[in-house]
Image (tube, rainbow, N blue to C red; front, side):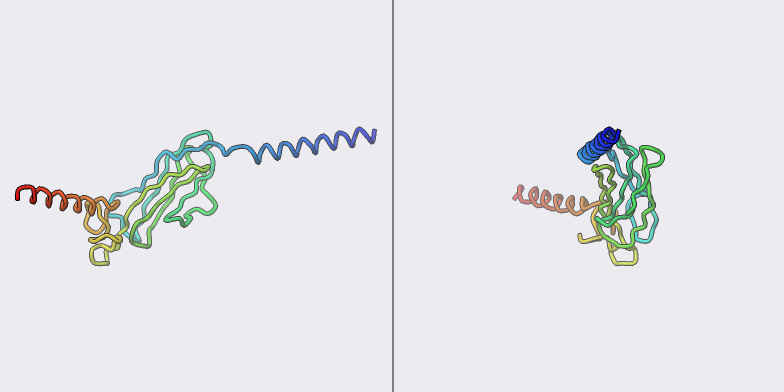
Length: 165
């Protein structure tokens, strides 16, 4: 009987080893971050509270969600999505400029970029572009499209003005 016990013990140990390898080699559960949004609208300002939300889907929909702002973790331990398919956190920016807000779940990420302004600074203190960060709102906005539009308008205006010469 002693030899049977050893064989059973060796078999159980072998199965446990195979199971551990299978778990480690398994691909991550498929999870998809479908969208990320920020409550409110531009201009976003420092020391004001907003809510970041993410809509989730996929087989890994119940995995922890990790949030970050410019690469700095906002949820070091992760956040359980609740209700299922949805995650939200409170966010209060303390610095002006561009903020890349990211939600990650199961290896899938989605980002949104917002420009935060400081109303106490001349021009809104909204970033590195002149006038505080672009967009259509002075001193703020949701990106650099305002400065790109004005540059394109200046170029096109200059072209049309020289075409008639």
